[in-house]
Length: 367
Image (cartoon, rainbow, N blue to C red; front, side, top):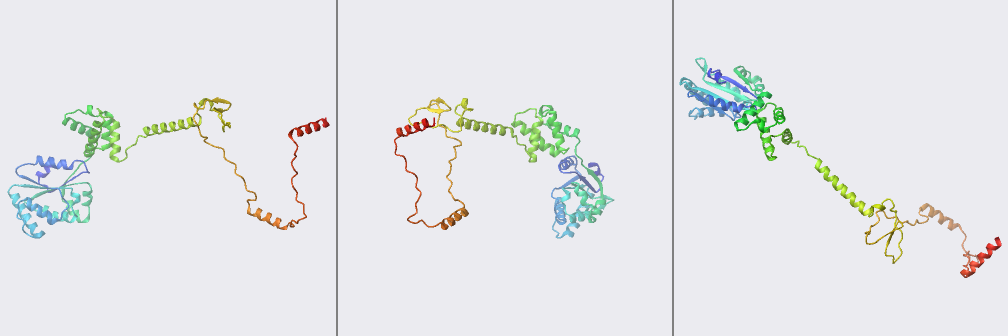
């Protein structure tokens, strides 16, 4: 990239997905290109209009930006670029997040890049953005700008071997060894989950180190890596085993309490009757299935399922039956004063011993 800039190619593009190190590439390029005759102008806020861009460049070059309007600023900038080239300066404009720049600004920027002195560009423009920027340049209004781009650099994800080497280098820079920090399974899981993206490797490895420190585990196992991954994805697994053990314990205790209340003496569980026998008044002991148990040793236990009381059924509950009985009663003749009413026979006034003698005589006659 530095070589192409020194040749004054004019327009270059660096494409890479989020987290592949475009910003680190810019910082490294700024350090390597820190020469006396090289001036790098970084632009990190690309979502600006063309007039704002011209005003920004004029101020970076130290030009008095007092002229109003885009045309006056463009004339002032082109004259300043020509003077800088004649003075031996190599100006480089780095546009970060170029995919956020408006299409009108990109199309107008082509006029700035067209200026040449002795067939060499007076300013180098480097577009740094995501792959969507290249798709944006495929529009009909930006095809001319796309055709003028001479160098295209594409950043690709790291391979598994490069990812492991990247992690090893970062740990050794901190004064450690990768074998004492991560197990093989944990290291392989980090490499697999990150997909070769350095930004993802940094985020995942940092959270894994924090979790391993909290659990005092060294080297860190694959289990902790999986827990961190589920936590970052919002799908943290819940361990239901302790909850199941506690629920089963509560259930067993409840069943035991019910059994103790229902069957105070476990030896009588098979003989326990559905209802307790009646106890005469004044009896000081409780009788259960023919066995005598001290009243003090057996607590008072209420019946769990007491017998249901028999309800008296009212006669003629049905309305139709009641109406039919009333009609039959109306059809009967009225009771006169001479009508005899059947009465139950009088009870015998004989004494009990006389009844017994009478029964014995009846038996003798039968014999």
